[in-house]
Length: 487
Image (cartoon, rainbow, N blue to C red):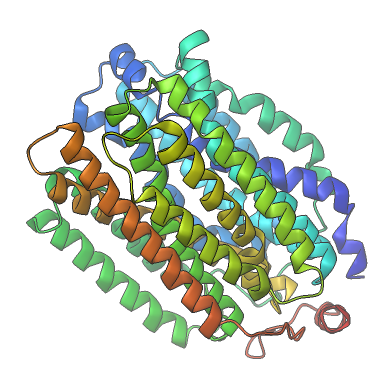
């Protein structure tokens, strides 16, 4: 029975990889188009930032809900619904005639992505059993994910320059159509027991708490960390998240089962991802600014300059696939984390008299290979031993850690860099601020590596972290756990 749920693995991998490419692409594709969007639709400077923040806010806020909904109501159903909603939101954004329409479309994209991303990763973990097959599949998924984020900058520049800014939204439509054509291969739904229900109090508290946390962090760019608005928003987020934790401990059908987070695999992988994303998102931002504001490179050239990073990441993913066969994810995460630390520390040496080869290309190749070594193994670690009926939840938690880490890291390091730069916007002052932020990025990757060494087990134990406090779907649990043990 369980084997039949895996569908056609090759087609499943293609579908979920395309879906992840779509989600990653839209994190960055609009960035280069922002000046053109402002001129076309008449955005104010403050309002323009919400073209980016609206997506981040709803994506980060709804991920836990999206992951759990896939487990309860069927991941294939949620996968298809997320794709359709993403395509509709992209079309609405491409046709927007007023600022509020584009911001609303970006918010809708974020909600759709929050349903799509956990369902995609969960489908992959069910289609491929733990072991070498899953390692190889996660390697492909990770490479496509990295390519989507990096190519978004290049695609945004090319589309804006040659086709108009609306195509940074409309380009999603053919990708959605192709992914929908492959969606039939996604495994048959593994749904919760009949008496399982969606934990609505937990869903409201988690979505509200995560959303307020992202909102409070992204607004620090404009109002600062010590402002009353920031403190009130972050305080409210802390209250809601604390209430969420209390509700989950008492719920008979929790949004996130507390026992899942007690797994060293799940806890260690999510801590690693949070720290690494906090550094990675910030590093992309500051390296881009360094190339444009210090080295004087144009937007299109800056986008193209990220291609070596993409190639290095793919090389790292391929190397991780070879290393990971039959080994614990830690075997790739530790050397990958150390290599990324070295690369971002090299980035931290940028100065106004630097050049592209010495200050961008060299560290890009080192850091990208290290990052590629981490992408697939950390996803494998986060789903190791997780029963299929909780795969969506585990995927939602992992994506939430990545998104929240990226938002918090970027906002915090932007404040740190601005404080070092001061009022003088000279190349020397800007370089000093960027260098400090990139040095902290290296420290974050070093801390993530320490987490991998101290928290993650040195050997994979193929014992599913199956929920013993929840009823299992009839006939599914025995086969599921047997398969997990065999792998």
